[in-house]
Image 1 (cartoon, rainbow, N blue to C red):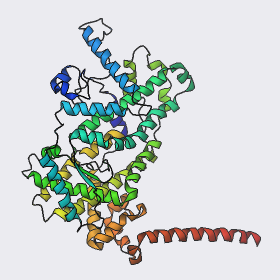
Image 2 (cartoon, rainbow, N blue to C red; image 1 turned 90 degrees about the horizontal axis):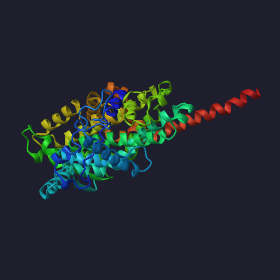
Image 3 (cartoon, rainbow, N blue to C red; image 1 turned 45 degrees about the horizontal axis):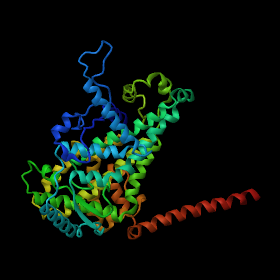
Image 4 (spheres, helix red, strand yellow; image 1 turned 90 degrees about the vertical axis):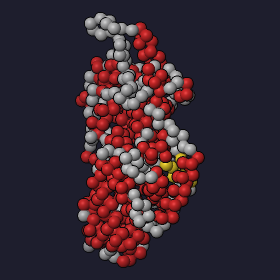
Length: 478
């Protein structure tokens, strides 16, 4: 999956820039931007190649105007690259591509005052209802109403933390594997490769953010705490599109999604290790990236320094594709399970909070589940970034486990499982939730203080090791 996702994004590099200033989209409408080489949808963007240039058979249909436009776009792309710093991803390019595409696709509706008030009221009401269904206190400190562009701009710092480890490792892995003679032959081309790599990752991320920005409903819609800590945010324009065909009032959907947003924030605010664990698992995956060195031996011969389009052909050829290792697969499985546990817990808590209060809660919940099964924002994001497809079956299994824990042990005991990462169910527990529930209920003392139970186990293990160490010299003396 990692190879397929990587190949799909690298073979169509969307470096299309319009002649208008991307920071001032009002200088031209979307149709003007597209006709002048502006960015539309991901499939509309021209590749970073030399379309229209003369081929082996001569110069049929060659237009010098196209050459001038291509050179202008190349100059703009390189100027963005030069101002983006030395990181592995050109985030300025990603942001500008995403914002421009959202403008072109008319996904930049500004929230009205009525929408702002409705969302604030919805979050306040949802918090009251959640108090009865979870022992974790409220985690929302501020409520905001975002447009799609707001979402891109305000979540980009978290995307940087998420993408940097993978992009950095991808950028360095093949350079490390390159034979020394090839490095010498390539010479200054290596710095160009690094610059192009940052632009490629930035372009890939920009396209992904544009697509997500037009679809996400809340700041936690992809299962990660993307917004600033304690900030709950909903996107009313996207919510209106979400409920098309459901025949439910917008007010119901807003309260339902506000409850999901508030539940996520309770978890991320009061389980301090959770967000860091998610990001650390991505970093663990990134550390295992390696490139097949045998595929790089003829790199110098495959890149023509006088023909920049050969760089695109190289990057789309599969030569620089990462190979998924067993260690990486373990990290991906761990990330998948953790995200499933988060989403399953939110499903159960929100269902208990709104089920008897919102007539359309069942239909809304089913729509959310169907959205996951057909490839919602979370699935698309992780498939694009790190080759992970979240399986809806795991989320359903996690919800079943949390439901069973609620029925067997109550809300407080269920929520204490989040006290320490060692207490969480693993993938095998999702397969056999009854066994996990039985183990959790086997010792009442551990239910009263699970952290103390972990510490006792650690102390017992340490004491056992000390005893074995003390016995060894005695046996030697005898």
